[in-house]
Image (cartoon, rainbow, N blue to C red; front, side, top):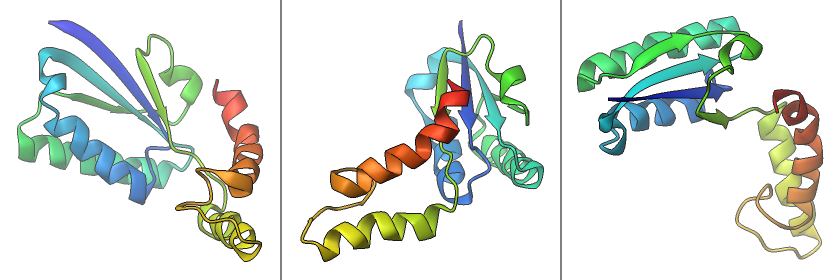
Length: 134
């Protein structure tokens, strides 16, 4: 069976993390791989919470995915086949600005971070976090 290492940076996110974990544990496509899922977050409390949740989901679905929690991305990344990131600073209040300020000037969009001027500001703000990860 082919091995596959997937690293999720920002895995402690209550919004993003839960859905991603369930997807990994139930994916039919991943069943043909020996999956090693490495959860990474700088918030140790959030990381531990998601690690415990991941194991509950794994047990519930009788998944074969191997789960690890590592707070240091530099230790987690070597050998990764895929890296998924979900990182943000002050996500909710800044997202509101990304959405509502352009909307006030007539820009119509679904989510401020996905297009138009809101996306430009979201990207510039996110680069400071993402560049060191890359």
